[in-house]
Length: 173
Image (cartoon, rainbow, N blue to C red):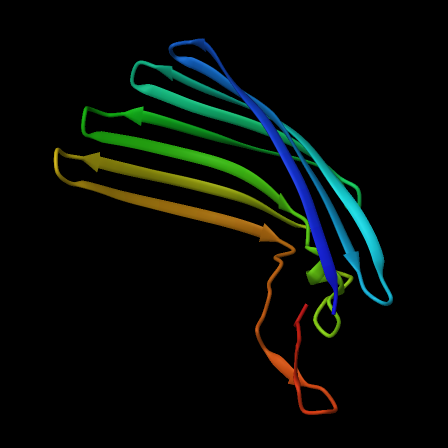
């Protein structure tokens, strides 16, 4: 087996510049470790982020930026943008774009009989659009999404048998 441990901490602050403009700033820290008879690994991920939220009449927007520094996989910038428009009191339209980054866990990399050390970090670009109607007792939403994912990390539950006939995890990665 493999013993993994994760310590994490997050700090954030929300700052109200005006009634219609606010900012969120923060930092995340993660320290991972993995220990088996053949592997003793540690890595950290430090991140900083800022988000702006604005409202101007019928328009609203959110812009967020994040910088991750992963000890194993290097630096990665991500962000998102969401724009909304109130067509009237009941009808709201939104469009969005976002990017994401996810490093594989130590279990996905090193778990005996399952892990794959060649797994690369997952990254994605996501587009969305939606419309929402809200009445006094009912609301209805219609949303569409397009997600483009590179190096998708998938955990699969297919098992194989060891020499004793016991099931051991397997992976197609």
